[in-house]
Amino acid sequence: MTFNKTALLSTVPSDSHSWNLVFMEFLLNDLGYKVENLGPNTPMDDVIARLERNGCAIVVISTVNGHGYLEGAELARRIRSETNHVDGLYIGGKICTENDAQTIARHSDTLRAAGFDEVFDDSVANSFDAFQTLVTAQLFPAHHLEKRVAR
Amino acid sequence: MIDFNTHVLEQFALHGPVLQPRMGFSDPGLMQSGLDATAASRANTVCTITLDAFTRVNNLKAAQRAIDSASMLNGYPIVNHPAAQTRAMLDQIHARYHLPVQIRHGSPDPLHIFERMVEIGSATTEGGPISYCLPYSRTPLREAFGHWEKACQVLSAGVEHSHIESFAGCMMGQMCDPVILVALNILEGLFLRSHGINTLSFSYAQGTSPVQDRAAVTALQQLASEYFTPGSYHFVGYVFMGFFPRTLGGFCRITGDALGMIRSTGIQRVIIKTPVESRRIPRIEENIAALEYASYCLHTKGVLPDVPFDAQEHTRILDASRRLIEGTLARDANLSEAILSAFDSGFLSIPYCLHPDNKRGAGTVLTANNYYQGFEGERVENAFSFLAALRQNIRTYDGVV
Image 1 (cartoon, helix red, strand yellow):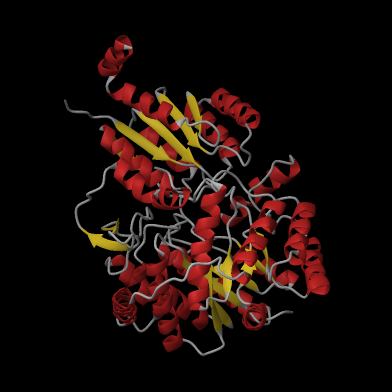
Image 2 (spheres, chains in turn green, blue):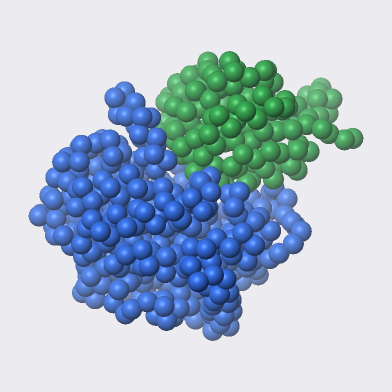
């Protein structure tokens, strides 16, 4: 089976963390995506410009500096309004500076309302497995379906 | 104004390693309380103001929006808050406790921050054109050198006792052969000194083996003594900056290993971590508890491990770092150009660093002794073996089976 699916990997402009992006690149690669890793402190304009140039199967925003709830929402609104990207748009990591479930739920709602299909904050719950299941499902829809049927 | 380097050297001679938090809050009242609590703690401390990420990337409008809407930032927006207010904070810490405050930021273009520091009479900060550009920004390396030249000149001309800590011992926080960390410290130190900064500190972040760390710090101390005037610098050790243990026991054990290595090498200043570090920004009392715990470890018999000296690893790091330093300096008579050329050709490179000006050829493996060692060539890891290496210290110190 050959895949020609590109994952655009990025973060929010104020976030300078890299390991999350390095790991996510390895992970998406291993899963079969061709990954374009835009690196830390990604300017929103770069993400928009990249999406206007070519389509991507999914856009993954990985952020851990606690500003995701502020800048992530703006980024999602811009992606949904300024580009033709209608496919998967996900954000994960640590989306705010607090780690109580209520605050995270509130900010997750805001991010979804802004245009993210799903929010994977893993400060409290392990949402990482859910993310993996989801990206795998997008790559191997039939396989995923079989697994679900088998369950 | 306090001479930070002299202060640290004197306090170290009197009381052992000086302890420091990585504290920063957006609210001035909270920041003031944090400084007070650090200064008044039972540990031998210096204070910290860590700036927020918007200030770091010079997005002052975003910082202002956050202040206006009372949104919590991940640090103190020093340029947005009134200068007089911050100055009063520092003056109070000086008057009450006679302690210095280091401004920690992480900016590849720190001119706006250094200008504000001059305005409020603050002389002590950290970073450098390599250590605050490559791992933490997308600013072209050449531009970062230009920015830092200018900013260093502003700081050194504007205050007495300018002091900058090179952050090069913490590149990427983990998964880096100490050879690179040691060499970059010296190169960045030479840059800072050549642009007028009076005194320096050299950093080193705990890795996955205190034995390797001791070998590396000893090599760093030796090389620093060859390139810099005695008494004009000190060393700062960081408790592990990578994926951090999640349990209280893990925190205690990893901190103990770091402090054991720090005691055995004579490092004068320590940046401590807190048990909540892996989950969120620590509160004031969590910072103070961690400082006092570290102080207890350092001053109580039998708590800290003795870290053996691995002469072979020390020689490997010393020789290879020296080759990198000398090989870089030989490339151009101009220091900035020499360093830029070394990165451009891949002679210097930082494993896993995504910056466009860093050649991503080199990787890092964990040896059987848990030492970090660089390798060149084909990637051997998959996402999960790589993740396992990133999480090595969680395995070691949380004792997860």
